[in-house]
Length: 218
Image (cartoon, rainbow, N blue to C red; front, side, top):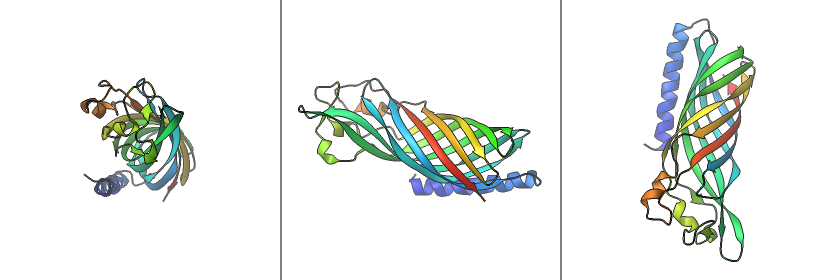
């Protein structure tokens, strides 16, 4: 399923669930919001020498009451992430930048410490990403640090579907909130590299992402 079709499907589900929740909780708030922010992305791995880099995120979200002091948050976000990997051309060692796009389906629980103003969020995220792409093709034949033959262009084909666990804090008002969320990739996002007959056949790496975002609710 393409990212555009996935986003359309999730948006429809968000509207449908919001409408049903609103009918059941006619005296409660149910808000649809637009989110935008920055990401700080890295890969936790012993197999590559990585450097965290900044990216961006944007998407749609819905927040509504669930039970007592708990809310539910669900929606879809798109991200443009970057990560650096150290490599060498035998003359010098440089940080090689990769970029990739991703769509995330979120379903988080929210516990209200101060209703509408302060809450903690936690829950699972389904992450669907494209391949790593070299930001500059001149680094394609660089040998990655720690290897004898592994070239920078050979690690681009990573796993597409990954599950994340997320947790963080949100503050603000009913119509606008700022959040800081940490996402850890439970699944091995480098697992697909193990089927490509590379110098290393036991890659393991887990994504590590800090998301700082603002959300306007309608």
